[in-house]
Image 1 (cartoon, one colour):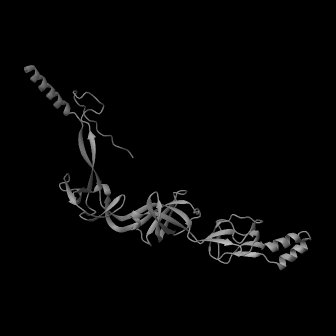
Image 2 (cartoon, rainbow, N blue to C red; image 1 turned 180 degrees about the horizontal axis):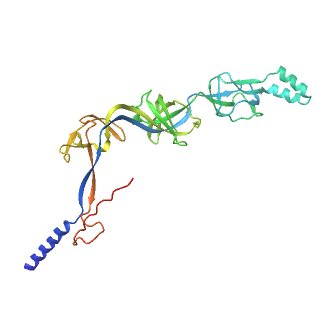
Image 3 (cartoon, rainbow, N blue to C red; image 1 turned 135 degrees about the vertical axis):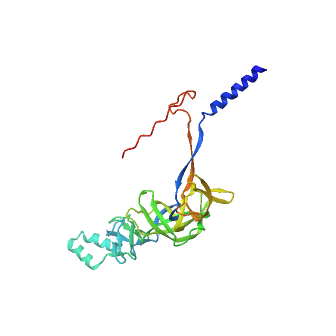
Length: 319
């Protein structure tokens, strides 16, 4: 019995001795100061570049295309001649005239004019799929014009209530991710579309400029700014703690090594920062815990039962 008691005492003593050398958590802090800045709440979603208004240019007569005077991507003005077409009758007369000589061709060119296809709007040519010499009917689109390219975003029904006409947006293209274009919400559609069992609403966003790289049908990404505040006091979201329904931060107090909780009333929040409505000033030093474990044994992994070496002084860094 006595031997067993001795064994227990020895084991307990060994455990206590070992625990003195186990790494213990040491709480360290990162320091932040509240800064005055801008808070933006945004809705991020996918979108597609497309014409705001699309217009097909068709010939009033059936016949043959003589000449197309524009190409895809060209900007055109209202009243500009886009293409020239010979009616079926004119084309037949000219074909017959070529058998008789150039003078006969010149005669019919003078007395039987071509039909000019004229742009009814200022816009851009987005489709030109036909070529001179092809025969056409009055139902064939010789060209397709767009008054301007816009971006149509797909917004989930859970977010559509936050979207308003006139809100700012930021546009980027999948094909050109480094190009950003500012835009404005222009129209919110009333009818939804079911996509993967989710109701989606289309939102038209008009860009402030249309870069040359924009093409109809391109995939885009959009951030719609639904709320924005400038000149407000902000902190990183991770600096704010909560207990029950109360929000607070840890700040450095006096004496210098002491820490206290400071209640904070929060406002707008984005993905990174939160607005501090009251409770803090720019002079406050906010502390954020970051745990680090500092081993009490020699860093070289020596025996813990051996005397510890004296720590070396840090070398002075040189610029």
